[in-house]
Length: 182
Image (cartoon, rainbow, N blue to C red):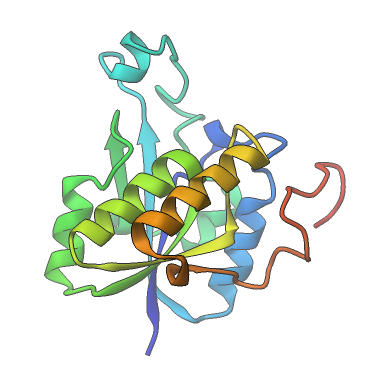
């Protein structure tokens, strides 16, 4: 039996020194052929969103920032991409998909551990779907402390046993140095 995989916001606008390694790790995860279906979310920051008005952040309004990471392109099917317009939780279309397909457990990976990954995992939990967060395939644009803070909150709210290591972290918690081939 395969487990569905939800890839949260692994998109161009969230690539930096702390997250650059995530697309390659997610590809390695997909290539294990343990996960099906492969589902994606992408964050789109609408001009009237709270991020724009309250936080004065205008990133991820349009392509190329809203494009999924190029490494993931071979695995993307348009009907399995769910846009989140200004929201960090589960979009209604994804919730409907999970309901229709009677998903009871799902692996979750992506960016930002302390924001969108956390919110989606908690939304899944609230809907009675068991999220399995693969910690070494998640990262935060704000760095290691933010990633670890997200994991700490998730541990308390969905249970530490739902935080798992996929074995792709090469033995480190922090992102590999950007110019190395990891």
